[in-house]
Image 1 (cartoon, rainbow, N blue to C red):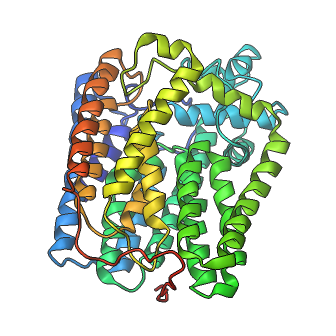
Image 2: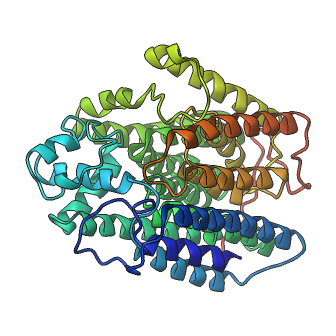
Length: 476
């Protein structure tokens, strides 16, 4: 089913139909089947691919519970093949990669993308600017300096071709996806069951591969340094207290890069700091957390000093967006930024509070994962605006947690939202209206199940008490 889903996703995208592929112009290296499908057929095939993708992940999780243990090398090879396939099809199911290309092009031309909008490129008759999507034409970039640096590098390599800029962005995403897969496999340690979970929930997860590699969403660029931060703590600290502060500082630098890609990744970074505090004893606790905060602050200060204050101001222009909200709010809330932010904070706090209370424990050798997952899931599920690629924030963390009922709920949610938004280009009002029914209904059902303790897993190792020494087995 995994192979079927990937093949169908690739085939329907390679048709280049306007319902699933935005207009990126000619001259790119992307595959083209030269056989456009009707809107109805594109929609139905996309839905089938998303449904089969979700079913494949759920079936894989069931197989792991029954003792299936795939060979990690073969899994990574399959991931590499799928990644190459998705890199060489046109950017799928979103206009986001076109926006990235516009912002990168602005940097290459010497302009500030946090001030100058893609519409200005269009008015200047720039070859890339002429292809700017209408939806974000007046929106400065809301991404951080790290993401913008990657977009600028892609624009420099791609020149005046939107298609080639998109290709280089997809190359960056493909490399990042494979790197995350390798790192997660290492973090899972020698246990075949834990490595199998990583394989199913991330490495060959068709939903994540499609949205992050085929769709080339920048969230993936934030995932890589976040997972590298975990690897740094695991590899450099390894339970030896004398290395706690230096390891935490390196992790903080990497975590800062993650936030400098997309600011919402401050949520799992906060969870990482909480986890670090909970397992470090005495004076080393304060020194370790301070070292992590200092490392992250150094990166963010340097990045935003280069970008300028407009990089922070542009974020507010993306707030209070009624058009693509997934949680229904009274109309007047969207007109007042403070009310919108307040509603978001309340929603995230409720989801996070229930998760912290009821979420199953994590593995003792990765004590940071549970608080990171709590914060990440709360931000995504409690967010007013939700898209399936946002789930990249928590799926790598979920893959490193013990099996529980949480798996099925979150996979089903990713599949549900994917079906709602596909084929993805020119999402209609009725799709958002459907989302505003299905997403709150899911959230209520999920919250009730969580509060009643229905998502508990097996006894796979409790998180240690504060200050308790943690055993860190060597990675494979």
